Length: 95
Image (cartoon, rainbow, N blue to C red):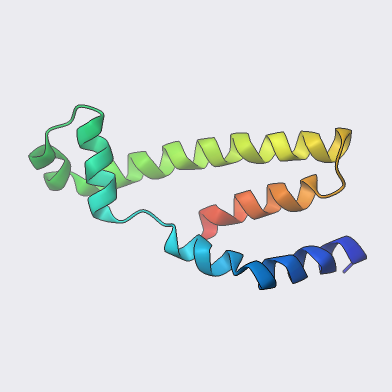
């Protein structure tokens, strides 16, 4: 492990990032609320919760990857911590 990775892990430990990562996962009720905000009837969202959750996960995965790519670009253009930022964003999908 190089010095940058060690520093990132130290910051991660001190900030409680992994704990927040798990706590920030969407609950079924939140997914249903979002589906309703998008125009789906609450009853339809509740009956089809597996499909609605799968859709929400796909959308979140796509957005997460887009954000990680921005960090990748920062890594190459500006900041040595961009790669760690990208890894942290991608790791959110593993929770």
